[in-house]
Image 1: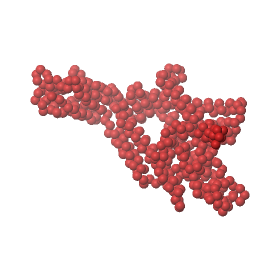
Image 2: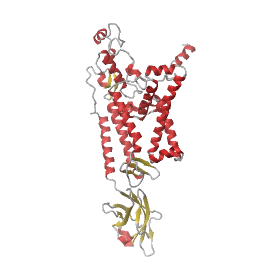
Image 3: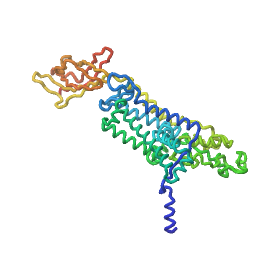
Length: 478
């Protein structure tokens, strides 16, 4: 091979060519309907939830609010504090387990229907279609030179995308502040600097990801596309092309004279696939599902809707492209596609999901309105007093997790009540959602000190229905 042919071969490499823009075609079907329903619900929740009022004693009257200044998260009637970091850890574990569980069963269902990138990309493609027209019109507009029509349509579609991206950033910021106050301050220039930074960053990233990069985020940036194969098994349901039925012994071929009915095609050895390319035209990542399972496939099911539409028009059975498992497709007698959930990996994910969810809900349901901790002052560990008694010092931390100011009594158990000294504090009062630290001294006689290894602090809320909090601690005398 000479140098020129070598250079030409390099130029023809698809990895080095500029990516051809993907212009998708609209399609109707049950998967498109499901995607649209998910999109409507997701957008309704995301954009409307910050505006949902919720009366509470302290904090803004907003149903969902992450109040970073007060270090409290309001989720309807639930108030989450930094001390509840365990809940966040469990929530992240549950999300991961759910992701692995669904992937083991039905592949990349998250990517195809629920991922934020998919939801916003779908909306931006709808905006393009609404302003620029269907796929042929958009392709024609893309190829034509810049003129008034192209400037108007391209400018209007991208302007609307930027507007949606802007409101996406504004809505995200509203989750961290009181929305009815934030919007006026945002536009009159009096909002916090962090609010402007959040809106600008989210506007840019949303527009770039869903309006410009689109499939590149799924195929190049998202790590999930790469490690999904670890969770796929032979029984995992995924969008697949039935090559046996579609190709036949003579391969796929467009309808022609003598190849228009299914009987004629089968007699000639051709499969049911008429090579229309509809499945490729509707794919948001631009792949040909007939080439087999590919990491770029996000399992959105749009190619299934497209193929079923074509099969209906030519009088062939549906399901040439369908959700099915690799094992079933390779079988000599395939059965109807079904979820094979009785597998060790899937059952393991399900068990982890159920256990983690149970632990989280139990922990939330059993949380006390008051939490307390005791830390012993260790420099010095104990002090010998002039009368021979032994003194230990402690720092008692009381956390009020209610939305009202609380009053407490501090007592001890296991040692004489008069051994406790908290100084001249007439009453222990802790404001709503706050933590109070107070110093306590415990003095025991030499004999009592020798016989005491541990005792308990009892923090008693003055409310009759509140339960006391008991914290065990050690007493050191040598």
